[in-house]
Length: 337
Ligand SMILES: Nc1ncnc2c1ncn2[C@@H]1O[C@H](COP(=O)(O)OP(=O)(O)OP(=O)(O)O)[C@@H](O)[C@H]1O
Ligand SMILES: [Mg+2]
Image (cartoon, rainbow, N blue to C red; front, side, top):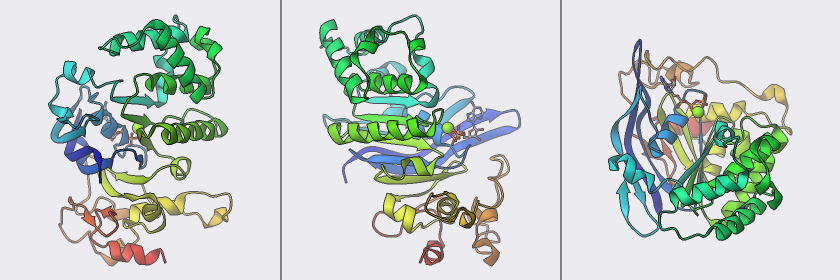
């Protein structure tokens, strides 16, 4: 175990007209250096909120209510990201921790050529002024080739590029200062399926070549299943399961994960055998007692968690570093054999 991030009891709230929503609720999880990690869950489960906690971009009406995010730098320092001021965090943004998100294409300034984006980013964030302009452009050309774009697009304006090309440009830009970790929040969602797979393949290759830690947030299980090492599953703001991808996919220990896996269509399988999870996630202002997934859980007919007024908050290790929030995980696993 070589953790790059240790997230401890992270709580992030949003103030709404009807009350306070805890969109990230007591999340405790470690991410290993060099892994590709996928965070999955339905819309509203808290994936973006968790990403914005790590990136320290939670803005009003949101606020980080409590927790720690320990970042182990490549130099062996340990920093609690949540204790850093904006100014201190800025030193890590782009250089150590970077992000690509769904609407990232809009961050390209329409009045600047692509090469100017690379130069401005390097000048603004490379505080040691290590690079000359010539070196920046050489590095930009190398990164563009990694994302399978031609060097000549350095002289293009953003509007001259397709959506997929813009997203690949952003990925190249985000890698400019050789960060340690990249957070990708739905990086391919706005793109067509073929372009999605193309970009995932590019990211997989970049990971192979650089060993960068990648954290993907997505609601699309099928798109990341083949590339991630570990998977975290979020439901109603909680991390309900975390483990190695083969365990989580093939031997899930939480019935929500089990439901998600059964809901994923595959070209090989009979589509009529796929089953959507019954019902909808509850309103975060009116959470059910006991397990939050209880009302939708196939085990709940046995009345396991609904009658008990238990507050399920701590994950248990079921073996092989597979963590689950479900106290009845053995019953879930029995369903998978
Ligand atoms: N600015 C905000 N104001 C109020 N509530 C918010 C805000 N941002 C997020 N939330 C609430 O926090 C919860 C988690 O939202 P979040 O965007 O993190 O989910 P998500 O898993 O990323 O969903 P999606 O798959 O749709 O991107 C939701 O209930 C959402 O309504
Ligand atoms: Mg989101």
